Image (tube, rainbow over all chains, first blue to last red; front, top):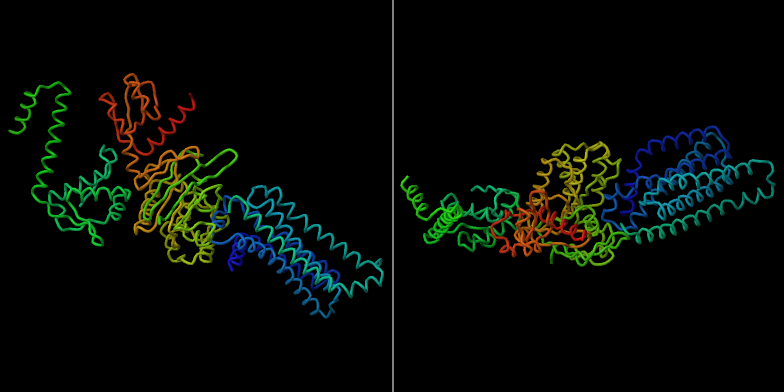
Length: 225
Length: 123
Length: 288
């Protein structure tokens, strides 16, 4: 349970960011749900996840060794501390997903039917988001945390995977939206995309578990707590 | 009871405490049968280490001024006259030997010193 | 079982070695851990709190090592560093929240009591605190829960005399019940010297002296005088002979006092005198 307490600490560490993140989520969600079609909704979902992956790495930036002695000294194991940090990252993805759901809710409220292909693609997108957070965290724990080189590494780790995902989604959206996509392949995709999404989600969670285990091992072997 | 620690004194702090307590016990300012503050209490009040006050107390105990009983603290014992006499004698000797040493250092003769001594006694 | 037991503690770095630090600190006593800057004081204290892993040796607090049970081990330590170890954007209120979450014995009432007593704002970010306020906030955070050992790393550096006196009293109150102990490191002893029961003195990662403070002071004499008057037999026994144009100052082991005669001024040293002359001694030796 101390992991959750560590997640709470990360929320305190990043309290200023919340003032930006929350309104941003709300505005994007409202705008998207109200005005756009289902393909655009997918775009919005990617955008929300993109924001989430960026915001989720902030606690690493505030973790120089000098000013976190208080946290390192807390009576808890390394695993609890690391899991807490991962929970923080995942909670941001969770928030993005929640807002996506809200977008769909608003969307259907305006009398539109929800396209299951889009839902499937959203699942894939969420899986990708989870995967990216786990990867970012792994990189931070391997090279960044407390070593002082976060400043250089940080911005790359923060932006790059999110950007990649963002443009990938754009690309997919463009493809599906475009006429060029063959109808039969489109139909196959529609049938299978939901299960693909679920499998992707499962794989993402496995990857998270793996990256937690590696991170804990790395921090435990480190010279200081 | 009062204790004043001097950092300039050549006497170690435990000895300062010991001497001041002894003085006050001998002249009755700390009456027999009264309980001294605990070692830790005294250390905190005076702002010195616990080991220092412990040593002061155990030396007072060895010299027969106080007795420390488990759970009761340190109690001032009745000062019997022999002990008192011995203490005062010791102090007189100390004072006189300082005078003699000083006299020797400046090459004063013993007769001269004796003269000063008698003058002071008459005064 | 002593409260703190340090056994052959060593830490190897590329450019620095802390070697074989061993001591015990009984319940209810205060130890001063002294040495010049870079002598390994902070390293030792970090090894004691378990924030740093040792290369060799063991630290037991109440018979327990950090490896055995991190939580129980850390619950009983209160640590105050020379700089604020709180995240910059934390407020006293945030700190209170975290303490409440993690320490079963934390008392919010006590914590707020300290904030009020020391005029510490509840909602200001730590980074906007003055140095003195930061130190007092660290003290508030460790004194508002039950601990057995206070570890203070240069905690009173740069504090004004009023605050130092306040902390002195706090430490003495802390060990009052005879169950809890304090270890503090410092490179200047001054007022802290009086309340220390034991002194551990290191230089260059090695133990130089370790004794009860009163003993240590009695074991040495501070000798001053005219350089020309020093016979070679005496000079050999001097530790850290320091000369100027008009005279010298050195430390002499008390058992060599008979070599002195009447030609010198002999004083009772304080711990700073002893430390300075031992360091001087090392420097003198290096020059040869």
